[in-house]
Amino acid sequence: MIDPSQNLSAVRDIAIARGKVARIAPTIPESEARQVVDARGRVVTPGLIDLHVHVYDGVAPLGIPADPNCIAKGVTTVVDAGSAGAHTFPNLRKYVVNVVDTRVFALLNISVVGQSTLSPDNPWGELIDLCLANPTLAIRAIEQNRDVILGLKIRMTENIAGRHDLDALKLTREASDAVGLPLMVHIGGSFSTLPKMLDLMRRGDVITHTFRAGAGGILGANLRVLPEVRKAVAGGVRLDVGYGAGSFGWSVAEAALKQDLAPGTISSDVHQ
Image (cartoon, rainbow, N blue to C red; front, top):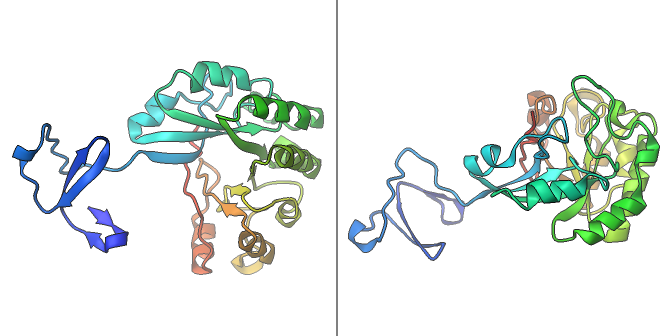
């Protein structure tokens, strides 16, 4: 049993009543329980929350089925981070959100087609054509689905957002401000610099792939955290890991942590 609030790290029995922890003790007699589960050698935890997944299986090429990859592994609540845009969100809701056992929320992609374009066979993403970034349609989709959509998502990598990435981010900002919800920005490998992106971000917004290595990341010369990043964090911009397959560098994470820059959330970016 690990509970930092009690400075506790020890073997304990846990009693649960009506869905809540009722008692924690070195030993709880089995005779007091209606059902006993021997959890030795296992992990017992409240349902985990993953802030960044892609579970639009069959529509977004990188999407995977929710239940085998989320709730079956202890993740009971997830946020699909931009797999769907205004045109494709209705069926994300109909065929995923409404039917899977995992609790699924979403960040709406500012591109109306969501992440239905980028695949191993097509290296160009959903914002190469800026006409696909439509704040009016995004606002309408969000207003119709406020119980599920928690914010907006934009990916700023150059093969996804081209050289007009800041224009796309401004359109995302427009929609975000109109509905009063935060936006999540996928950083790394972009045409524009991260400080220019941060100028358009506000308190409550999220940078994902915070520890991505290479150009466009949070570190400058000599692996020092950019002052603009520190200013943004001090102003309420949040840092998310968004591990993924190519979006995390140990050298970046270690350098940032040594400089007391820690993420607020550790998410998986789980996808194909």
